[in-house]
Length: 149
Image 1 (tube, rainbow, N blue to C red):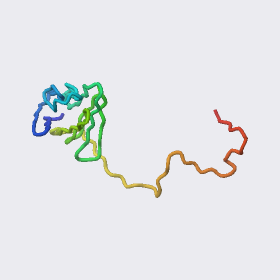
Image 2: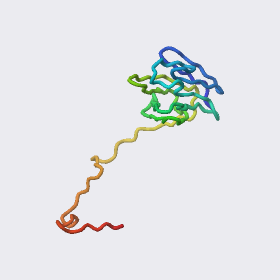
Image 3: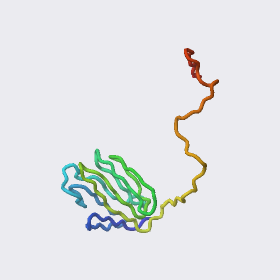
Image 4: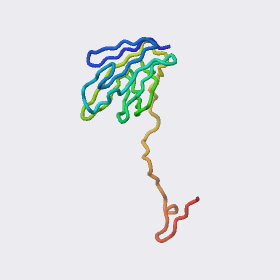
């Protein structure tokens, strides 16, 4: 079970306990900016089923998550939702010409996925769509190509 959720935007901080919820946007619990391109309520942090969730309540703005401790990212489409499995996450979005980022930290995050960096295998990078054919495999000029289906 996840503990408290700490949210920070430019020094304004929220400390949420399990069972709490808070919204962010132009006219929300956490006011981001008076930018008219920003939704009044863009997102909501909510504790449900023992986990912290981020709901994108906007109709056109995408919310991006970036784990500050790894290369993991997530994209939350408008009207989408995601469980916060990252202990320390940057939440970013764009409204008009402005880009915003707030920090969120989950206390006692238990569902973190650890991804070990696997060593690269192979000696060359293959390119999609490149097929090397010999002369017998190439169609002859003027001949019809028959597809197997």
